[in-house]
Length: 258
Length: 258
Image (cartoon, rainbow over all chains, first blue to last red; front, side, top):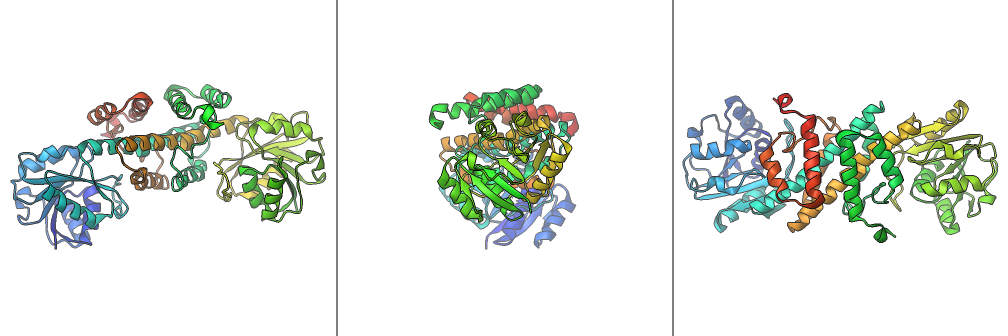
């Protein structure tokens, strides 16, 4: 059975630890804060917890560095190579952080937004994998498939494109809801009123590509409604309304709607 | 039992007809296309279908004009006032379309995105009501409550604000997914990969206001990632990425994150 050490006890580390503990042996949890390492180890029935990078179990098959982006390099340089597979889980950081420090290494990035204190089930999450050679990639893919059926090879450039796409689809969609909440707040109305509409919009993604299910004044080129809405907005809400409406109109010229 | 005539057989009319037929008597369906009127009438067990505005049953309690925005005025002027409650269902059109043509009138707007050939359940939909006097408003609210528990009085100005909010939360959020799909497409990756992420983002709305659950490089003021993403984008995707990132940063100054 594969033996894995998880370095980190944050959102990603927690979800990985829970996911892996059902399919392989999580031999140890490391955290800078011993109580965090112990809590996570206990939660998944892992026998060892430590806050000392020099006390990592030396003979595990894989070491998963699931700490914040800026802390990854520090962990790598603090521990000597032991010939095992080492990987980080960041969407933004390159695989080259390991270069010169490890012989077998890679990246296994779960494209998901992890929340504090919520264990996210990983079965449906898409993982993107990259390794420094074919043998390492092979081991990395096997490890990934213990967590999810969706494991795809993706180099750093592709991972960056996926990250951009996730910013649009998650962070920016969420910001649209923030702006909508502000508009409603000015009218003294609760955000609650929009939720059925948002749910319907998301449900449509199961049947249609988003470009195919677009509705609203912009795709109809309804300038009367668009101008009326712009006259009610100011600041960045106005700029954003204008720019996105134009972006929708540009992709859907009236001729093609006819 | 209240008797209602539904004028229209499109997305909104269809969902209203199904919703109302369970709670009151839908006496007649009108459509410009007789076969459409007949199909909808048959689907809900309504005894009468017509394509002739001069053949509307004269003694119903309420007449719901659920046709496209631009066709509402034509329906109103083509039929004489019969003293009943008349209403339209548009979020964009003013109540004044009825002024001088009817004695008791109003607007009952379901804030929902209706799809073709899908009957949308209305129980959770928020309706916004406006009428020309208190008695008409009273009748209108009663009618609305047959459809949903969420019926709120809202004048044309408030309805316009709600419409703006729904454009941000539905149309513009969906466009973010269109842009994400384009980015993925350029990388040869399917949109499917983003769906777990989108679902998680939407699920968070049940527990937190969107402003509170915002994640990503912009709220962290992570200029290294933002600049790297901007360098990969061009055209309106680049402009939109920049504008929305700035909008998120402006609402979340770094001092407050500390």
